[in-house]
Image (cartoon, rainbow, N blue to C red; front, side, top):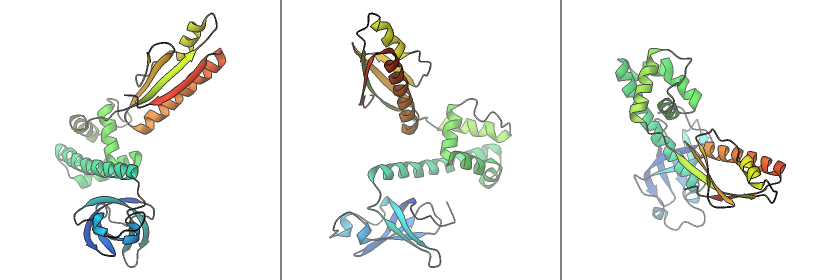
Length: 254
């Protein structure tokens, strides 16, 4: 839990503490001893007749920080300026940070030391490298050659806890590629457009002429989207060079 104040524009996880007609007080879950206020005008888009239709005591949600007054210790929050995607992402990050804190406690116990000493020795550096600690645990769980430059005793304990407790997430995206060539060697040209694929994250399957299923499996949507984009751009470039008609149609990839 952080001792400082959030920045304007930050997304924060809050627990509604008290709801009144003109707004609601909320406890900031990630900031020690900090509370904020959601004015009724920032609860929802449009006119809010009954604030309790949107907020209740004990409810956890995500707000955007509108203003921070350090002298008064006041934090103004907005609920309506957070979309559903941002809310899901922030709640997921918050939950993962909680998991990471518990996993770090296990690492400290296995090393026969304290969480504070772990933070001093390696945890803060990992957090700076990965953005937040749970990503470090995910990376350690998925890569047996994790941080090859590090040989300190904590690394083995960290990897052991990661492998035993972290399930690596996977997402699937993709679509269908349609391509054909009227040239006498059209089949060979299409094969050349597909190319040789050594990346286990990318799968191309024949789905009946002239369609091919293209699927990317990765640990997160950002990486998956990047791999899909690079794959399509590479195939498009080869298709143009070889005179092959090429079209990609997006689907869920499932």
